Amino acid sequence: MNLVPVSIDSILIKQPLPCALRDGSGVLLASQGFLVNSRQELEQMVGKRDQIYIDADQSDSFQRGYMNRLNNLVMEDRELGQIAKTQISPYDFKRSEEPDTTDEPDWLDLQIQMNQVLRHPLADTFVPRLERLQAELDRHCLSNPDGTLFALIQLSCGDVRHYSATHAMLVSVMCCVAARDVLKWPVAQVQSLCKAALTMNISMTELQDRLAMQKTALTPEQSKRIESHAAGSVDLLQQAGITDRLWLESVLFHHNATPGPLAQRSEGKRLARMIQRADMFAARLSPRASRQADAPALAMQACYFDENKEIDEAGAVIIKAVGIYSPGTFVRLSTNEVAVVVKRGLNTTTPKVAVLVNRQGMPTGEPILRDTSQSEFRIVASVLQRDVKVSHNLERLMALTKPTKSDRPW
Image (tube, rainbow, N blue to C red; front, side):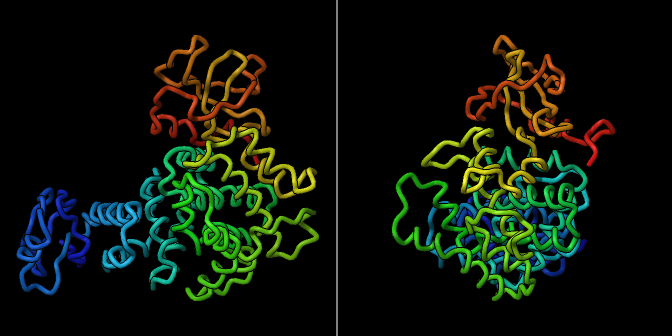
């Protein structure tokens, strides 16, 4: 048994324990599933022990419980002092030393982890945890870019409670695919770009999540924070020990609305323009409490055309990389079937799709694959996710995103 310490403040009150609690010698204090009814009961259970422990094999379950508790406190608008008291245990970072090498990513878990990292930029573990998460995203993006885009676009178009973290991951992945596969930038440059995309809004993570749920207009104070967030993010990153010039420069300028070719910009500003275009595209795909999501075609247009209504070089690269109809978005075919895009095609307008609603408007039960490069299955319109009234098995659809020999070469 490999025991690792946990904080008593991490134990969920009035919820079943995700794993057994033990003392330093391995003696069982409470079994998995035990319900702790009060703080007093918990303190009596622990007694005078300086530390309580769990089996390392069960630490993933415990971490999910902790992350969920922390997120609930934030979403319930609790006082910062109460949230700060929810301490992270030392065990939480033991598994972060090695990346998860499983074939199937747990996107909800990654979403929660990214949310936690972005909300604590000055924690001692910020840099290694961010590096681990970025490396995991990069690995999934390399092995299955369509599946990675599919998962993050589906998350972005759905629940907005983790908006900032999900948005950051989607923008980072879009930039990664564009810079790596289309522009063929050096690996180090792509890495700086992806990290900058993940942390561009780090100084206003909490505010960004609140605004996604806010139905009223921005207050003057909120507007001021948004206007200054780029410089604030750079300041936080420098305090955390980040010295990468490209990373910092691209975060600083990622909201600059300056049209023109990439070659006319400094290296950092080229990265910043890529982030700015991907940021715009991803933001328009996501709903807010105050507005509905744009159709993918409208999001694409906003990214593709610059401030002078001319084709934007960086925007065109993003669209070439992810497609006009990106994985995870919905379309209507010439057959009147409604389908979800599961893979990009040989060009930006002809993806592979899975039909979920037949031409009579009825659910298909099993997804039916279509190649929209065939004229009888051409795409005639984008469809908003909220207008698709059938439930679908995400795990089954994700399986359809996996690469095959017939997929487009880069």
